[in-house]
Length: 84
Image (cartoon, rainbow, N blue to C red; front, side):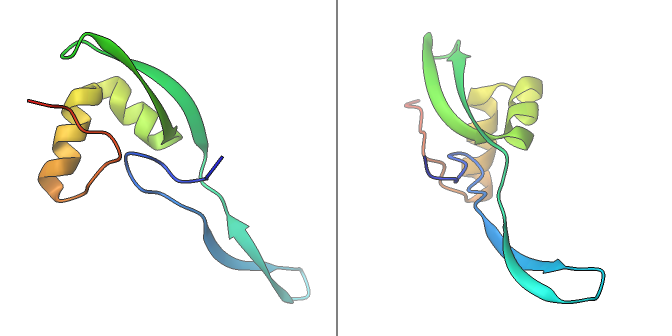
């Protein structure tokens, strides 16, 4: 499973683990990606998505359809599109 959010585009980033003695070794910061099934009342069907935990919280507030439209308005191309 790729570790990329289908809506926000969040993906792993790199950084350093810093020990007590201040030695630095490379590590990856991996986003909290979950597989989730959402019901979209505008199209009357379920949609399976791999989304980050922060996107799930926003979808719970706004709804999937409104959130995707907001992302498209900002100029981001989500992996899912709805036909108007």
